[in-house]
Length: 144
Image (cartoon, rainbow, N blue to C red; front, side, top):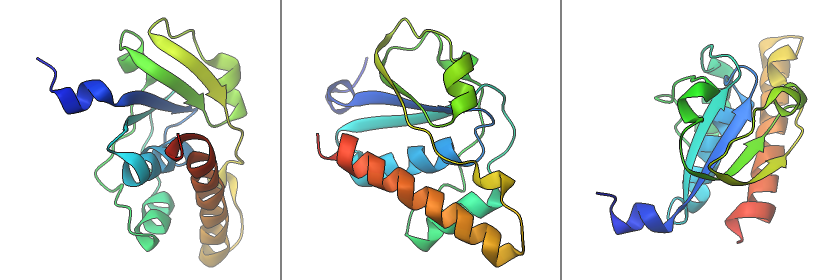
């Protein structure tokens, strides 16, 4: 039996290629910003691991994603979802139809795992992507 609080929240799946950074950060941010109205999940067209840089930059803003795991989208194909949001162009192109999803959006963010340079430069790239994702969530979802 589903509790009433879960039934009243919209179920949102963030989808990316590897489910290692962008989709993981989006899941953590939505949970942090609007857990009372949204149930957030993330998956990838392939599962890898959550990037330690993503965990670090999220911890900087008080969001703990260290226990999140990389999952494949197959896990969610039969799930009822209100919204599927692809956060990378590759996932948008290869994203299957989610019959249980009421709607689908595409938010294109650069892949921070492709950042080059020293550790601080790489973290800077992860921070920028984190902040872009937070801006989209705040303007398009959290304010709903």
